[in-house]
Image (tube, rainbow, N blue to C red):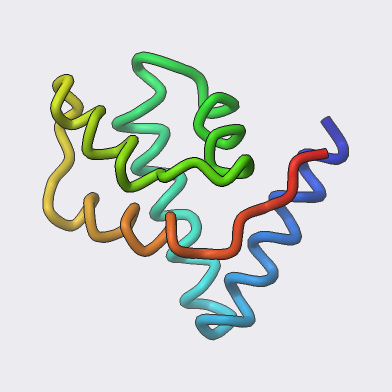
Length: 92
């Protein structure tokens, strides 16, 4: 668990550097809020993190989940689309 928290913290730091300290963290939170609100009703965030970290095509997965009934607003789709393009955390 400590390693996973470290990976998340490192990812947040990289995002903050890449997009300006305040904006990057805020954006990261927005992405996690969308995932928590729209994705974790069917499966855990761990499954999403594992897929993202292992290099799976998250945009394709997102589109498939929408086809199956996941309801994402345009702004939520945009937030996740940008988030999926970020550097992937390495799996422990």
